[in-house]
Image (cartoon, rainbow, N blue to C red):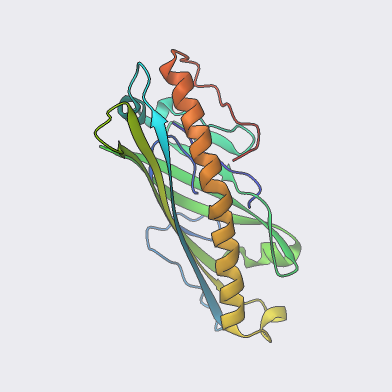
Amino acid sequence: MAASLRSPPPLAAAFRRSRVVVRASSSSSSSSSSAVSSSSSAPKARFVARRSESVPVQQLARPLAEYMSLPASQYSVLDAERIERVDDSTFRCYVYRFRFFALEVCPVLLVRVDEEPDGCCIRLLSCKLEGSPLVEAQNDKFSASMANRVFCSSRSQDSTIQQLTSDTTIEVAIDIPFPFRAIPVEAIESSGRQVLEQLLRVMLPRFLKQLVKDYQAWASGDASRKPLGTGEI
């Protein structure tokens, strides 16, 4: 399995078969709460995006369910340009760069993969924003959570075809920077939601495509777990 990202358009993460649940505060802290609020009195904006993508997968000699039950230590990172393995179950993911108003933002996620019977749960340990000084100044002024459930199921009575699904939710809460406080909160939230939705719209299909390629390599007997991606995720 695997995980992956690096400049933006899930999450997610990303990873072979997975159930991703991500929660994090802005900097390097590992928060178990669903959100970490800033102590400042600045006005706040909240962005939420949800998306589900599925692809049919032709089962090969080694079944998809077996591939998805691999331990995290055997996951491929899928795309070495987007994901780094920190240890057996922890990965650093570089999300695509994206623009928010006049700012260019690149989130860097640290996630942990917890195995589950039908997939895995990937939890966000920390999230750091890279970009301009104004962007990086927000690292102690926002919180984020993400849940990406990736699983396979039978699409029909035809047992040779399985459905691979990635079901993702992302939520971000941020103190509105002073230069943007003249803009209505509703406009900022609408723009933020559109950015997250576009991120998922681009990343989830790419993630699933890489996942299928990795499954096909593994099912053909390739035990190297070498990442097959080259920055596409």
